[in-house]
Image (cartoon, rainbow, N blue to C red):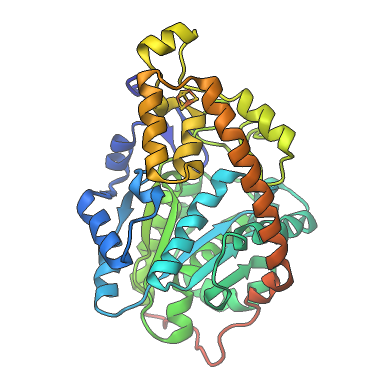
Length: 389
Ligand code: SF4
Protein backbone atom coordinates (compact mmCIF):
# COMPACT_ATOMS: atom_id res chain seq x y z
CA UNK A 1 0.00 0.00 0.00
CA UNK A 2 1.71 3.29 -1.02
CA UNK A 3 1.91 6.10 1.51
CA UNK A 4 -0.59 8.91 0.98
CA UNK A 5 0.72 11.88 -0.93
CA UNK A 6 0.22 14.30 1.93
CA UNK A 7 1.31 13.84 5.50
CA UNK A 8 2.14 16.20 8.31
CA UNK A 9 4.54 15.53 11.17
CA UNK A 10 5.20 18.18 13.80
CA UNK A 11 5.73 17.91 17.57
CA UNK A 12 1.96 18.56 17.97
CA UNK A 13 0.36 16.86 15.05
CA UNK A 14 0.79 13.70 12.96
CA UNK A 15 -1.53 13.33 9.96
CA UNK A 16 -1.67 11.11 6.88
CA UNK A 17 0.33 7.97 6.16
CA UNK A 18 3.94 8.88 6.77
CA UNK A 19 6.61 8.31 4.16
CA UNK A 20 9.55 8.07 6.58
CA UNK A 21 12.24 8.42 3.91
CA UNK A 22 10.62 11.62 2.66
CA UNK A 23 10.18 12.90 6.18
CA UNK A 24 13.88 12.43 6.81
CA UNK A 25 14.63 14.43 3.68
CA UNK A 26 12.21 17.16 4.74
CA UNK A 27 13.84 17.42 8.17
CA UNK A 28 17.36 17.20 6.68
CA UNK A 29 18.50 14.34 8.91
CA UNK A 30 20.84 11.47 8.02
CA UNK A 31 19.86 7.89 7.38
CA UNK A 32 20.87 5.34 10.00
CA UNK A 33 22.40 3.14 7.31
CA UNK A 34 23.88 -0.34 7.49
CA UNK A 35 27.47 0.92 7.88
CA UNK A 36 26.58 2.87 10.99
CA UNK A 37 24.50 0.01 12.36
CA UNK A 38 27.48 -2.33 11.88
CA UNK A 39 29.74 0.15 13.60
CA UNK A 40 27.33 0.36 16.55
CA UNK A 41 27.34 -3.44 16.80
CA UNK A 42 31.14 -3.54 16.71
CA UNK A 43 31.47 -0.94 19.46
CA UNK A 44 28.69 -2.55 21.50
CA UNK A 45 30.48 -5.90 21.18
CA UNK A 46 27.25 -7.62 20.33
CA UNK A 47 24.11 -7.27 18.27
CA UNK A 48 22.42 -3.88 18.12
CA UNK A 49 19.22 -3.35 20.05
CA UNK A 50 16.21 -4.79 18.16
CA UNK A 51 14.74 -1.30 17.85
CA UNK A 52 17.75 -0.44 15.70
CA UNK A 53 18.05 -3.82 14.01
CA UNK A 54 14.38 -3.75 12.92
CA UNK A 55 14.64 -0.22 11.56
CA UNK A 56 12.40 1.46 14.17
CA UNK A 57 15.28 3.86 14.82
CA UNK A 58 16.15 4.86 11.32
CA UNK A 59 17.52 8.39 11.23
CA UNK A 60 20.02 10.51 13.16
CA UNK A 61 21.93 13.71 13.56
CA UNK A 62 25.65 13.47 14.42
CA UNK A 63 25.62 9.90 15.75
CA UNK A 64 28.88 9.25 13.88
CA UNK A 65 30.50 12.23 15.63
CA UNK A 66 29.57 10.82 19.04
CA UNK A 67 30.97 7.41 18.07
CA UNK A 68 34.17 9.02 16.75
CA UNK A 69 34.65 10.57 20.19
CA UNK A 70 33.84 7.30 21.92
CA UNK A 71 36.51 5.54 19.88
CA UNK A 72 39.01 8.20 20.96
CA UNK A 73 38.09 7.49 24.61
CA UNK A 74 35.53 10.26 25.10
CA UNK A 75 32.40 8.96 26.89
CA UNK A 76 28.98 10.26 25.91
CA UNK A 77 25.73 10.27 27.88
CA UNK A 78 22.11 9.58 26.99
CA UNK A 79 19.19 11.85 27.80
CA UNK A 80 15.47 11.32 27.61
CA UNK A 81 12.45 12.64 29.42
CA UNK A 82 8.79 12.40 30.18
CA UNK A 83 6.06 15.00 30.53
CA UNK A 84 3.90 13.42 33.22
CA UNK A 85 0.16 13.80 32.65
CA UNK A 86 -1.02 10.23 33.13
CA UNK A 87 0.17 6.62 33.03
CA UNK A 88 2.79 5.50 30.52
CA UNK A 89 1.88 3.17 27.68
CA UNK A 90 4.15 0.50 26.25
CA UNK A 91 5.30 2.67 23.33
CA UNK A 92 6.53 5.33 25.78
CA UNK A 93 9.15 2.83 26.93
CA UNK A 94 10.87 2.62 23.54
CA UNK A 95 13.25 5.54 23.93
CA UNK A 96 14.12 4.51 27.48
CA UNK A 97 14.81 0.94 26.45
CA UNK A 98 17.27 2.19 23.88
CA UNK A 99 18.90 4.45 26.48
CA UNK A 100 19.25 1.49 28.81
CA UNK A 101 20.94 -0.47 26.03
CA UNK A 102 23.42 2.36 25.49
CA UNK A 103 24.05 2.47 29.22
CA UNK A 104 24.73 -1.26 29.35
CA UNK A 105 26.82 -1.51 26.18
CA UNK A 106 28.61 1.85 26.13
CA UNK A 107 28.78 2.55 29.89
CA UNK A 108 26.77 5.75 29.43
CA UNK A 109 25.50 7.95 32.21
CA UNK A 110 21.74 8.38 31.84
CA UNK A 111 19.88 11.64 32.51
CA UNK A 112 16.10 11.50 32.81
CA UNK A 113 14.07 14.70 32.93
CA UNK A 114 10.58 14.61 34.44
CA UNK A 115 8.91 17.78 33.20
CA UNK A 116 6.07 18.15 35.66
CA UNK A 117 6.17 21.94 35.22
CA UNK A 118 5.66 21.75 31.45
CA UNK A 119 2.60 19.53 31.70
CA UNK A 120 1.04 21.90 34.26
CA UNK A 121 1.66 24.82 31.88
CA UNK A 122 0.71 23.05 28.66
CA UNK A 123 -2.37 21.15 29.80
CA UNK A 124 -3.58 23.17 32.75
CA UNK A 125 -3.29 20.08 34.96
CA UNK A 126 -2.87 20.94 38.67
CA UNK A 127 0.80 20.86 39.68
CA UNK A 128 0.14 18.34 42.44
CA UNK A 129 -1.27 15.99 39.82
CA UNK A 130 1.66 16.34 37.37
CA UNK A 131 4.08 15.80 40.27
CA UNK A 132 2.19 12.66 41.32
CA UNK A 133 2.30 11.28 37.77
CA UNK A 134 5.95 12.27 37.59
CA UNK A 135 6.75 10.03 40.56
CA UNK A 136 4.69 7.19 39.09
CA UNK A 137 6.23 7.50 35.62
CA UNK A 138 9.73 7.59 37.09
CA UNK A 139 9.15 4.20 38.71
CA UNK A 140 8.08 2.76 35.35
CA UNK A 141 11.16 4.14 33.63
CA UNK A 142 13.61 2.93 36.27
CA UNK A 143 11.93 -0.49 36.30
CA UNK A 144 13.48 -1.08 32.87
CA UNK A 145 16.73 -1.84 34.68
CA UNK A 146 18.87 1.28 34.66
CA UNK A 147 22.09 1.14 36.65
CA UNK A 148 21.31 3.35 39.64
CA UNK A 149 24.96 4.39 40.01
CA UNK A 150 24.93 5.88 36.52
CA UNK A 151 21.42 7.29 36.38
CA UNK A 152 20.40 10.84 37.31
CA UNK A 153 17.01 12.48 37.40
CA UNK A 154 15.91 16.06 36.95
CA UNK A 155 12.42 16.42 38.39
CA UNK A 156 11.82 19.95 37.24
CA UNK A 157 9.99 21.42 40.24
CA UNK A 158 12.43 19.78 42.63
CA UNK A 159 15.61 20.24 40.58
CA UNK A 160 15.22 23.92 39.75
CA UNK A 161 18.23 24.99 41.84
CA UNK A 162 20.40 22.65 39.77
CA UNK A 163 18.80 23.57 36.44
CA UNK A 164 18.50 27.31 36.85
CA UNK A 165 22.10 28.59 36.43
CA UNK A 166 22.38 26.94 33.01
CA UNK A 167 18.77 27.79 32.09
CA UNK A 168 19.58 31.48 32.54
CA UNK A 169 22.41 31.22 30.01
CA UNK A 170 20.31 29.19 27.59
CA UNK A 171 17.31 31.53 27.84
CA UNK A 172 19.32 34.61 26.95
CA UNK A 173 20.28 32.97 23.63
CA UNK A 174 16.80 32.00 22.44
CA UNK A 175 14.41 34.70 21.37
CA UNK A 176 10.65 34.69 21.36
CA UNK A 177 10.28 34.55 17.58
CA UNK A 178 12.27 31.29 17.48
CA UNK A 179 10.13 29.48 20.05
CA UNK A 180 6.98 30.98 18.56
CA UNK A 181 7.87 29.56 15.15
CA UNK A 182 8.95 26.16 16.47
CA UNK A 183 6.24 25.61 19.06
CA UNK A 184 3.39 27.61 17.54
CA UNK A 185 2.94 29.87 20.56
CA UNK A 186 0.07 32.37 20.54
CA UNK A 187 -0.53 35.57 22.51
CA UNK A 188 -2.60 33.50 24.96
CA UNK A 189 0.25 31.02 25.63
CA UNK A 190 1.27 31.22 29.26
CA UNK A 191 4.72 32.55 30.03
CA UNK A 192 5.81 29.28 31.68
CA UNK A 193 5.84 27.52 28.32
CA UNK A 194 7.84 30.30 26.73
CA UNK A 195 10.62 29.80 29.26
CA UNK A 196 10.28 26.02 29.35
CA UNK A 197 12.51 25.44 26.27
CA UNK A 198 15.43 26.68 28.36
CA UNK A 199 14.75 24.06 31.04
CA UNK A 200 14.39 21.26 28.52
CA UNK A 201 17.73 22.23 27.01
CA UNK A 202 19.73 22.20 30.23
CA UNK A 203 20.23 18.41 30.59
CA UNK A 204 21.92 18.32 27.15
CA UNK A 205 24.74 20.44 28.58
CA UNK A 206 24.63 19.66 32.28
CA UNK A 207 27.28 16.88 32.42
CA UNK A 208 29.78 19.04 30.51
CA UNK A 209 29.07 21.95 32.83
CA UNK A 210 29.17 19.85 35.99
CA UNK A 211 32.43 18.10 35.15
CA UNK A 212 34.23 20.88 33.28
CA UNK A 213 34.90 18.39 30.46
CA UNK A 214 33.22 17.96 27.09
CA UNK A 215 30.65 15.19 27.46
CA UNK A 216 28.62 14.72 24.27
CA UNK A 217 24.90 14.02 24.55
CA UNK A 218 22.83 11.49 22.60
CA UNK A 219 19.03 11.77 22.59
CA UNK A 220 16.86 8.91 21.32
CA UNK A 221 13.38 10.28 20.46
CA UNK A 222 10.53 10.07 17.99
CA UNK A 223 11.29 11.93 14.77
CA UNK A 224 8.30 14.19 15.46
CA UNK A 225 10.31 15.65 18.36
CA UNK A 226 13.28 16.68 16.18
CA UNK A 227 12.23 20.36 15.93
CA UNK A 228 12.53 20.76 19.72
CA UNK A 229 16.16 19.78 19.67
CA UNK A 230 17.06 21.85 16.63
CA UNK A 231 16.71 24.89 18.87
CA UNK A 232 19.10 23.30 21.37
CA UNK A 233 21.58 22.39 18.64
CA UNK A 234 21.53 25.94 17.29
CA UNK A 235 22.73 27.48 20.55
CA UNK A 236 25.02 24.69 21.85
CA UNK A 237 28.30 25.81 20.36
CA UNK A 238 27.73 29.43 21.36
CA UNK A 239 27.71 28.21 24.95
CA UNK A 240 30.85 26.14 24.41
CA UNK A 241 29.07 22.75 24.42
CA UNK A 242 28.80 20.13 21.67
CA UNK A 243 25.54 19.90 19.72
CA UNK A 244 23.47 17.01 21.08
CA UNK A 245 23.29 14.06 18.71
CA UNK A 246 19.85 12.64 18.03
CA UNK A 247 18.58 9.19 17.09
CA UNK A 248 15.11 9.31 15.57
CA UNK A 249 12.50 6.59 15.66
CA UNK A 250 9.46 6.01 13.56
CA UNK A 251 6.19 6.28 15.47
CA UNK A 252 4.28 3.35 16.92
CA UNK A 253 0.96 2.69 15.24
CA UNK A 254 -1.98 3.22 17.60
CA UNK A 255 -4.34 0.32 18.31
CA UNK A 256 -7.01 2.26 16.46
CA UNK A 257 -4.76 2.40 13.41
CA UNK A 258 -3.52 5.98 13.85
CA UNK A 259 0.01 6.70 12.64
CA UNK A 260 1.12 7.70 16.10
CA UNK A 261 -0.27 7.22 19.59
CA UNK A 262 -1.27 10.80 20.20
CA UNK A 263 -0.84 12.07 23.70
CA UNK A 264 -3.19 15.00 23.15
CA UNK A 265 -6.38 13.30 21.99
CA UNK A 266 -8.28 10.52 23.80
CA UNK A 267 -5.79 7.67 23.90
CA UNK A 268 -7.34 5.18 26.33
CA UNK A 269 -8.21 2.61 23.66
CA UNK A 270 -5.32 3.48 21.35
CA UNK A 271 -2.52 2.00 23.47
CA UNK A 272 -1.76 -0.54 26.17
CA UNK A 273 -1.05 1.32 29.40
CA UNK A 274 1.32 -0.03 32.00
CA UNK A 275 -1.46 0.00 34.59
CA UNK A 276 -4.02 -1.79 32.36
CA UNK A 277 -5.73 -4.82 33.88
CA UNK A 278 -5.35 -8.15 32.00
CA UNK A 279 -8.99 -7.96 30.79
CA UNK A 280 -8.38 -4.50 29.34
CA UNK A 281 -5.29 -5.80 27.51
CA UNK A 282 -7.35 -8.65 26.04
CA UNK A 283 -10.15 -6.33 24.94
CA UNK A 284 -7.86 -3.74 23.39
CA UNK A 285 -5.85 -6.27 21.41
CA UNK A 286 -9.01 -8.09 20.28
CA UNK A 287 -10.32 -4.77 18.89
CA UNK A 288 -6.99 -3.59 17.49
CA UNK A 289 -6.66 -2.35 13.92
CA UNK A 290 -4.75 -4.79 11.71
CA UNK A 291 -3.43 -5.05 8.19
CA UNK A 292 -5.58 -8.13 7.60
CA UNK A 293 -8.07 -8.86 4.82
CA UNK A 294 -11.85 -8.79 4.92
CA UNK A 295 -12.19 -12.59 5.05
CA UNK A 296 -10.11 -15.55 6.17
CA UNK A 297 -10.17 -16.95 2.65
CA UNK A 298 -8.81 -13.74 1.16
CA UNK A 299 -6.10 -13.50 3.79
CA UNK A 300 -5.00 -17.09 3.21
CA UNK A 301 -4.84 -16.37 -0.51
CA UNK A 302 -3.39 -12.85 -0.61
CA UNK A 303 -1.64 -12.41 2.73
CA UNK A 304 -1.86 -9.31 4.95
CA UNK A 305 0.05 -6.01 5.24
CA UNK A 306 2.12 -5.85 8.43
CA UNK A 307 3.39 -2.30 7.91
CA UNK A 308 -0.03 -0.78 8.62
CA UNK A 309 -0.91 -3.13 11.47
CA UNK A 310 -0.93 -2.01 15.11
CA UNK A 311 -0.39 -5.58 16.31
CA UNK A 312 2.69 -5.97 14.11
CA UNK A 313 3.94 -2.64 15.45
CA UNK A 314 3.80 -4.13 18.97
CA UNK A 315 5.66 -7.27 17.90
CA UNK A 316 8.23 -5.13 16.16
CA UNK A 317 8.88 -2.62 18.91
CA UNK A 318 8.72 -4.78 22.00
CA UNK A 319 7.05 -8.13 22.17
CA UNK A 320 8.80 -10.48 19.72
CA UNK A 321 11.19 -12.46 21.91
CA UNK A 322 13.92 -12.40 19.27
CA UNK A 323 14.56 -11.55 15.63
CA UNK A 324 13.75 -15.07 14.58
CA UNK A 325 10.25 -14.86 15.99
CA UNK A 326 9.76 -11.39 14.57
CA UNK A 327 10.88 -12.47 11.09
CA UNK A 328 8.62 -15.50 11.24
CA UNK A 329 5.56 -13.42 12.20
CA UNK A 330 6.29 -10.92 9.44
CA UNK A 331 6.80 -13.61 6.83
CA UNK A 332 3.71 -15.60 7.84
CA UNK A 333 1.62 -12.44 7.96
CA UNK A 334 2.61 -11.51 4.41
CA UNK A 335 2.10 -15.00 3.05
CA UNK A 336 -1.30 -15.54 4.67
CA UNK A 337 -0.07 -18.45 6.81
CA UNK A 338 -0.87 -16.40 9.94
CA UNK A 339 -4.37 -15.12 10.57
CA UNK A 340 -5.07 -12.00 12.60
CA UNK A 341 -7.12 -13.79 15.26
CA UNK A 342 -4.29 -16.24 15.95
CA UNK A 343 -1.72 -13.47 15.88
CA UNK A 344 -3.70 -11.47 18.46
CA UNK A 345 -4.25 -14.55 20.61
CA UNK A 346 -0.48 -15.08 20.67
CA UNK A 347 0.30 -11.46 21.54
CA UNK A 348 -2.22 -11.04 24.37
CA UNK A 349 -0.62 -13.30 27.03
CA UNK A 350 2.81 -11.94 26.07
CA UNK A 351 1.68 -8.41 26.90
CA UNK A 352 -0.14 -9.50 30.05
CA UNK A 353 2.94 -11.30 31.42
CA UNK A 354 5.11 -8.32 30.60
CA UNK A 355 2.82 -6.01 32.58
CA UNK A 356 2.79 -8.36 35.58
CA UNK A 357 6.59 -8.65 35.62
CA UNK A 358 6.96 -4.91 35.04
CA UNK A 359 4.77 -4.02 38.02
CA UNK A 360 6.93 -6.24 40.24
CA UNK A 361 10.13 -4.60 38.99
CA UNK A 362 8.52 -1.22 39.58
CA UNK A 363 7.99 -2.01 43.24
CA UNK A 364 11.61 -3.05 43.60
CA UNK A 365 12.89 0.36 42.45
CA UNK A 366 10.43 2.33 44.61
CA UNK A 367 12.65 2.49 47.75
CA UNK A 368 15.51 4.24 45.94
CA UNK A 369 13.96 5.93 42.88
CA UNK A 370 13.76 9.41 44.37
CA UNK A 371 17.32 9.28 45.66
CA UNK A 372 18.42 9.81 42.03
CA UNK A 373 16.81 13.26 41.81
CA UNK A 374 19.38 16.04 41.49
CA UNK A 375 18.37 18.90 43.77
CA UNK A 376 21.47 21.10 43.93
CA UNK A 377 23.90 22.44 41.34
CA UNK A 378 27.30 20.75 41.14
CA UNK A 379 29.51 22.15 43.90
CA UNK A 380 31.90 24.77 42.61
CA UNK A 381 30.50 24.94 39.06
CA UNK A 382 30.55 28.51 37.82
CA UNK A 383 27.78 29.80 35.55
CA UNK A 384 28.84 28.95 32.00
CA UNK A 385 29.70 31.45 29.36
CA UNK A 386 30.42 35.13 29.62
CA UNK A 387 28.73 38.09 27.99
CA UNK A 388 30.44 37.34 24.68
CA UNK A 389 29.89 33.61 24.54
FE1 SF4 B 1 -1.27 -7.83 11.92
FE2 SF4 B 1 -0.82 -10.29 12.78
FE3 SF4 B 1 -2.87 -9.74 11.10
FE4 SF4 B 1 -0.37 -9.63 10.23
S1 SF4 B 1 -1.44 -11.45 10.95
S2 SF4 B 1 -1.96 -8.12 9.83
S3 SF4 B 1 0.72 -8.87 12.05
S4 SF4 B 1 -2.62 -9.01 13.22
